[in-house]
Image 1: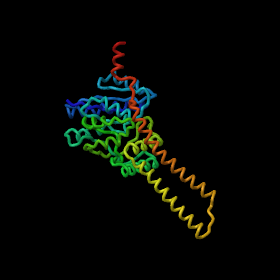
Image 2: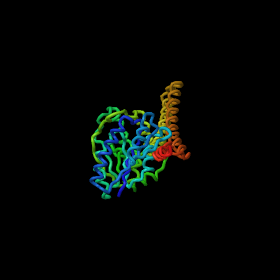
Image 3: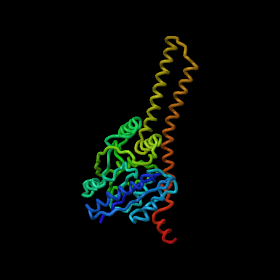
Image 4: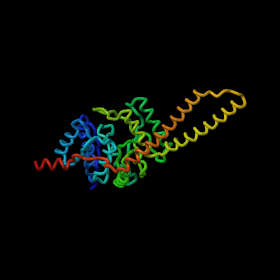
Length: 322
C-alpha cells in the first residue's frame, strides 16, 4: 500500500471548503478503485483564519478519520502553511493544492500516472493563460518571471503553480531547505528532480475571495528576487561606479568650460541637483543592502516557521476525555 498525503493550506475558506472536500473525496475514491494500492490522508492547514475554517476542519475530522489538520496560533502566511503540511505529511507521495478549486482535483489521476512509474519525481500544472486576472496584474506577473530568470541561476517556469504531486524523495529535499524566508516557487526549482508540466486554463473560484492583493503579490515577488538572486547588490555597485564616472566627466567639462571658454559655473542649482542625485543613489543602494541584511537578521534568529495551537490529535484527545 502507498499513502498519498493531500496538503491543503487554508485562510478564510469556509465558503469553499465543503465543495472542495466533496470534490477531492470523489476524485480520490476513483483513484483508489483504479489503483487499489493507494490510500489517502487529507492534511488541512489553518493559517490563522478568522471565519469558521477551523470549525469545518473539526467537523470533517469527526466524520472522516483520514482528515488531519494543524491550526496555527496566528496568520504566518501560505509559505509557512505549505512547509507545515510537507513537514507533517506521512505519505509516500505528497500533493500540495489550494482549497479554492483553482487547483482542480480532477488533475490528480493524471499527475499520479506520470509519477508512479518513477519517470518523473513531480507533476505540476502550468497555466496557459491568465483568464480572470486584470491586465495590469498579468503584465507584472509576466515581467516578474522574465526578470527573475535573467538575474537568477534558478529557472522558474512562467505559469507553474504550487499545485504539485511529489515523491517522498523530493519532499525530503525541500524540507532540508528549512530557511525562514521561504519562496517555494524557487525552492521547487532549486532542488531539481524531473518535473512534468501539465497545461491547463485558469479557472475562477466558485466561492469566496482571494486573500492575495496586488501589493501582497508584489512583496512576494521581491521576496523571491532576494531569495534566489544577488543581482540587486550588483546593481547597487554598478550605480556607484556609474555615478563616479559621470561625476568625473562633469568635473572635466566644468574645468574646460571655465578655463577655455570663460563660462561662469552655476553654483546653487548645480550643487542642489548633484546633492539630490547622489543622495538618492546612496539611499537606494543602502535600501538594497538593508533588505538583504534584514533577511540575514531574520535567518540568524532561528525563529520557528510556524506555531501550532491545535491539531486533529489534540482535538480528538480532548473530545475522547470529555
